[in-house]
Image (tube, rainbow, N blue to C red; front, side, top):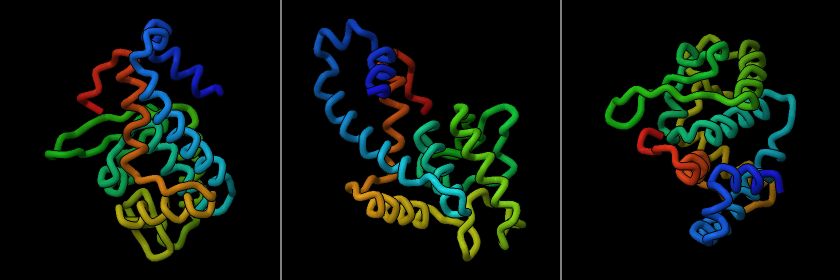
Length: 176
């Protein structure tokens, strides 16, 4: 499994051999399989497919909180610099770096977003009725999990994925 290879290199072979992370890794692999199945189910070219894929990639890539994700506006996205600017808990501003796949999926969403009937709104995430709220994002994830035939994934589970990889590799995670 490619993700296991990435994970083991991120946490270091020494730690894996010592068994320090073995039980956490089992839980992580189970969660990772569900998230991978969800990502595979989001492939498509329609507006909702592109939006949902971009949301899932950003969650996985950045570890953003659900409320941070729902509050995103167009002006805080910089594809050129591969980063997002978010206002987190306690009105704390953060810069979240974006990986290549997240940038690609976000760019695809932005192109179909331009043609959306509510495309004039400043919010990044749109639905058929306007802005997609945090409740709407959570409902979308639940609906997409059901369609993919996997147990429901709570949006907060996405937050743990980058945090665990960074933590196992020794990166300070108090800012994520």
